[in-house]
Image (cartoon, rainbow, N blue to C red; front, side):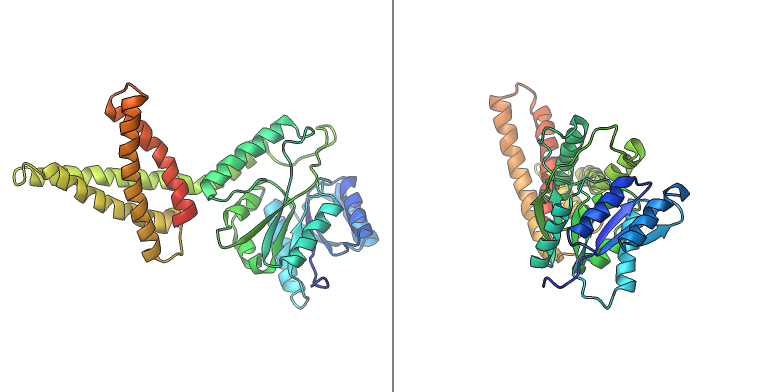
Length: 355
């Protein structure tokens, strides 16, 4: 297995000497299969790319203009698929050009990919390390919490650029949306419970602000990242709202139709009819549009039905306990608070265990 190849892809935009040093260190470490993508850096940076190409035999792919980190990674992957299709490649490594990933850790990911050729491998940093800036520590931990909630995957470092992508995910990686920094988050969101994910602790390398140059645009790039991160949850909100409107509408119609005919039971019957129809409608929206599940409907519908029963029973029990023992509020207000919490629980269970 060790003779199988694992190219190292390094996207680079307006690099400094760290890129040259990284390529040299990788070569010295015995890692010679390197592909660097010059993402439209301009004439001022030609010498750096010429140096790594001529002195270290690095393959340099060029974008005429800056197209973003995501596009740079896709360009390198397209090169591997088209130009090196006859070679025995089991996957590729992505690494940053700013010195945050050491040759030792890159080699660690390559070794684990050889041992686990079907696994998606992430190099995980320790954000409790004292040298991590507070802004980076908070940003990464908040993003991690949000990601773990909306995806159902427990990943410790969602923003790591050191990754090993196995060959069986090449086509999926090419099809993932995103051209810039959001691409890496979208890649994680594209994973599911059937993909094998491995996390490896790596060195946490952070330099001072005066020495570290980042091309991440705080506002615009953050918006793109979080917009894609929260996309399914926003759809879940819209699905729930539309189902609630349908539930109340059908309930209103049914009580108007049944009140004179079934004066003792029209409310209960109207509630059941409205809840069944709105529930089926909500299931359909969640299966097809919110989570885009490809699991058999018989399986997902059974689980969804059990969740609906659990939600109803749990809501009733919690409202009773909280109303009688904790909060001296009207029952309706307690129910609003409980159901609001159950709304988030329902999303997580549907994302992780149903769809």
